[in-house]
Length: 364
Picture 1 (cartoon, rainbow, N blue to C red):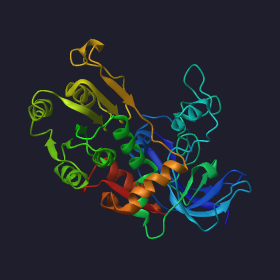
Picture 2: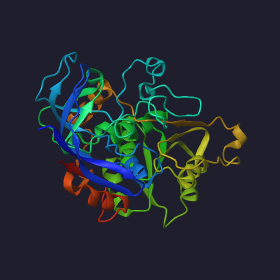
Picture 3: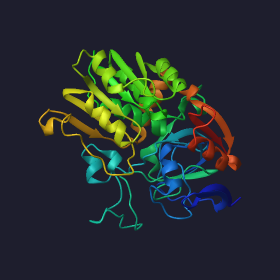
């Protein structure tokens, strides 16, 4: 068999399942037979044309699967082994990665912001479904496999580990970047998949009061299961006023923005105490404005931190440890399952947020 099914980007607003050649395996690569993958909000940005990728690219960046073939230089793994790889696949050769930011381990970026190799914008070490073929296919080629493959512990299902490659790593990074200390009060804006993972991450970091904000009561109920102490529906209350009441006018120690909108970004700043941290996880499609009064004209000792999903096998190993320990269980976030043949229908469901969808398991 030399061909495989793959979801490819045709043009903004158009994707389709088509036949593609199964990739050849180089010495540092691994070919993974996908058993489960999923659709991410970033994939929707790609579908809409809000984030540019090459026509004909296979989309997706969240792989769970089995090693089909190993490159000759890849050591410590075996064919037939269940593995995951992070959405971000660093080579650990760049200056950024060796300076402690492996997520930024991308190709050379020219002064105009384009990738010298591909001629369009690239983001850090994000390669799957961005500058190389991604995971919404029967097979995916993992580059720099020895740095990126993580074995799945026996006894864990695909659904239990499906969040590790991207949203769990991203959500936890949001909590890590928020400088959360034991006893802190944290507000988390948006309880989509990444926001829910950030809620669980804030709980693990030691926050004593977690305030979860969303407009969907089902998602707010899920956030309670994952660690939220107080839930606010922004359709029912003025979120900023309510948070200031909860904190006695002091503001929160940290806020996490997990949606990517100007409105939630502003709210995250407005509820911060002096010296507080805003951890930004959203993928923004327009320039942001900072409300100067609430930012104290830059004199409030505030910190704003952004993040790209950390990758690499050590990051994945730690996340798998958390899942295996039972400290978090994100399998309930998988609300729907589709075959790869029906993935275009799954995109429509996910994009329009029907039927209580959170995450969709795609099974080739």
